[in-house]
Image 1: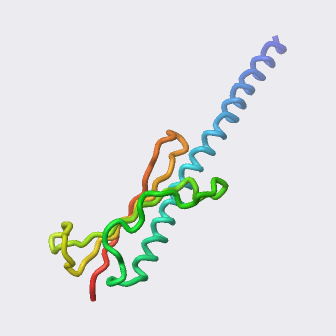
Image 2: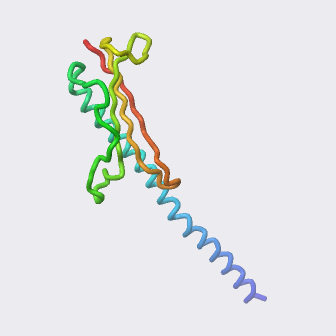
Length: 132
């Protein structure tokens, strides 16, 4: 009887061990997804700071950067990210305006692939720049 009990206990341990081992690849995928999201936020913030450093008068209006890869080299981690930057005038009601009203809205969107669902995700950041 003790041999059967030992075999059942080993079987239970093996099932638990195999289940535990199978969870590691999934957790790595979750970590990679979080890493890509963080990198996207850094890339958007970097572009925003570059534009704000130019000053209101030097920030161009329209599509500043069309959606494109950030690197042509597939070995570079930036290859997997795309960024689009647009700038528009805003009126007093926070609506888009065709003429210079003294406020510009900068919108930056970084696109990346979700490691779990293999779908395109995006991170968008917007800021206002005003004429002094």
